[in-house]
Length: 293
Image (cartoon, rainbow, N blue to C red; front, side):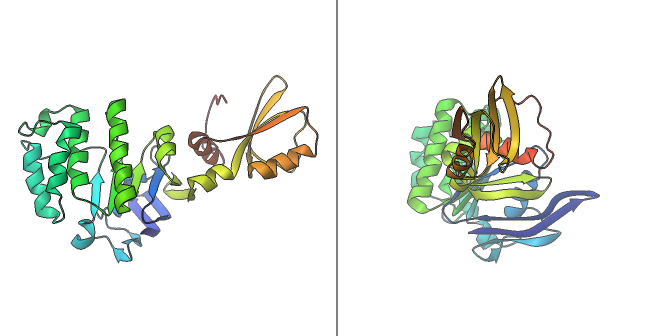
């Protein structure tokens, strides 16, 4: 389990993280989302032990991650901006990784060439962006991490390879209970693979729940007629007589309230993760223009 408690980080007068707390259960696939500048990458650099917190703690299984090599060896990290040594091939990087991660799985390393089909001797700097991302996955998965941390992990990959990478990651979760933390702006993709989600804004955790709970507590109501006054409405739009409301509450609770007004028509629909993201941020004055439902 990963626990971030009351984490604060400032750079000069800018507060990048503001009393941030989050919990990633063991074996979970956790999506960390938020607008640009929300502090996601800064949070990840604390989780991986790159940054020292100004205050607060980051612990994995109860042990602080900062400057503790035994904990860092259990983490795999793929940043958005991937780094390799300038002239290194994937074989060279394999030797480097084996020196850091004693659990590096050479059998898996050789088998994954059937998946990624990367040149073994060519310098990685000559690879395309997508091939470099594949090389990072190839090496990181072979470290057999207890926790895998991914920042925009499939950016630059074609649709087939994206699906292949997610398949490998979810196989690790199912077989080894690997904990996965993913920061991404591709909310549609996260919705398919994540079971927990945290929404950040301005360095704080705005909302953190299981995806099932999150989708079960906010719904979309389409109605022709009068809506009851006791609904907690996050957003409202209309097209002719049809009103579309984003409402806090479960589908059953909202339907029961609407039935009391006997509208000509109504339907209660689930929200996508992208819609939840938009309307939760809208609730804290995050400006969203020209929303079309």
